[in-house]
Image 1 (cartoon, rainbow, N blue to C red):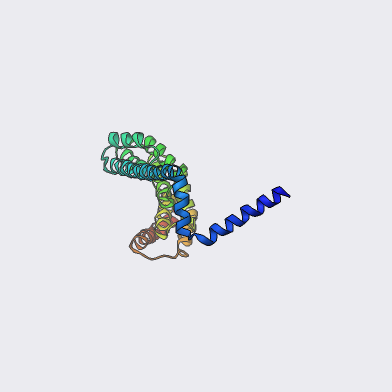
Image 2 (cartoon, rainbow, N blue to C red):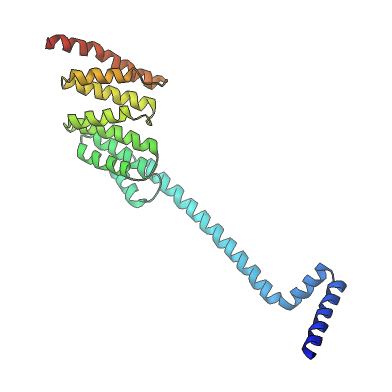
Length: 226
């Protein structure tokens, strides 16, 4: 009974407090009793925000520096160094593509193929991967792998997910190599495939025109075979 009376009295006092004091007055009472804890919480929040903002600014600065190094490198040695110094930056894929192009221009086809394979195998921009596959086909042709290059060109030409200009370029590459190898049946098959392609644009029209120009060569080779 005493406990019940005590609890009732406590409840009564709580109700009296709620009736006598406004929200702001109750907060002032709470703050006067807990001001040290409140100051610690406030200081911790300020420190957290300051540290977080500092880290964000630092990460932005690091990202910009890495992007500048990867994009401004202008020769094989500097591009390789920029990639080694910033291996996890999102711009590494494009830098490797540029490096592969430099190797190709210098006749270092094996080195070019290695870099292109890295771009193709790593997560990243889909368009860059496709362009790397196209360049790899050219590299394989330069290395003497005509059958392999022809297969790579044809595969990309038949891939409906590739941009129309890429498909048109690769179709020309596949037809050209078929003609070079005197595989006239394959060349005719691919020319017929190209007639069903859709897509507009100057690049697409350019490659379609070059493929069309090969039709007279194919016709002449057919006559030679008879």
